[in-house]
Length: 351
Image (cartoon, rainbow, N blue to C red; front, side, top):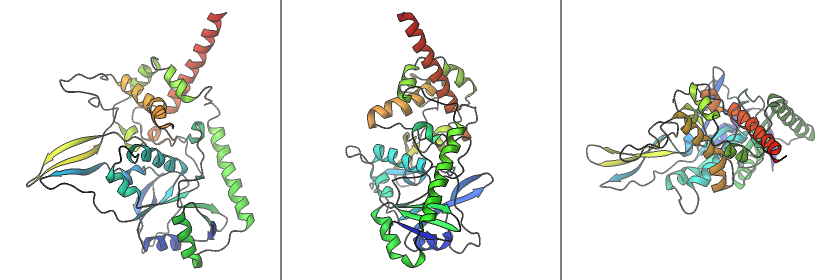
């Protein structure tokens, strides 16, 4: 059973909740946040038509965790199996990126790996991308093709459930009584809905063509004054890196408790003034423009060179969270235009 049909979400979620904790989206104003699932709640669960504000990294790489202690060593806590419902393709790509950082063979983080192995991933199609979403500009898609255990697609009178892993297939087979078959007409409807979303994104970003690989554009613009100009409105709130699903910088903080010492791992931000400061007070990136440049170089150049993939998934969370009006898309557009101008200038000089 690769695909199945269900008319309501509650039976699906309640079945999953029998063996693990479940987190799902809940609408707050115009946005979705992640909340624990309550099978007894009178509020009917809903399928989010856009990615949640909560980045999935929060479940795998929490903002604050104890990683060491003395005199007794700190071992990774036993993690209960848990499921996150409503993740989008951009979220799945962000998990793949974090896996490269925290679960590579040479530098494996046991705290991250412990959570990752217990996570059951339930993706869903993105049917109403926001104004800030630009996944397709970076080669992404608004529906998941891999990286999930189950995927949910809204169709007429219900939902298509698709398995994407051995664990997902096992769940469908063991709960066959909940599901029905999926007629070809509904599979066709799903394809049409996905194509409509792709076209919506194409129309929204018709003015953001990249005329070369983004790595080349950003790398060529390393010394551009664009970073100085764009950083003028930045207020160093660091919201862009906090909500980013792939930013993974952290620092270690030593703390003394009543009867032991502990080392805490806490989220950090490359946009923070003291981020690059070293012993003695030297700081190579005191200027906001330098920190903004570093952020772009890391996402589009250095991470790609190290791991073979860009570190931005085009989810647009940073754009929504920005207090200082630094729009990543606008910076890329300006760098692209400058890239084209430099190419024209070089051609004219060659003549």
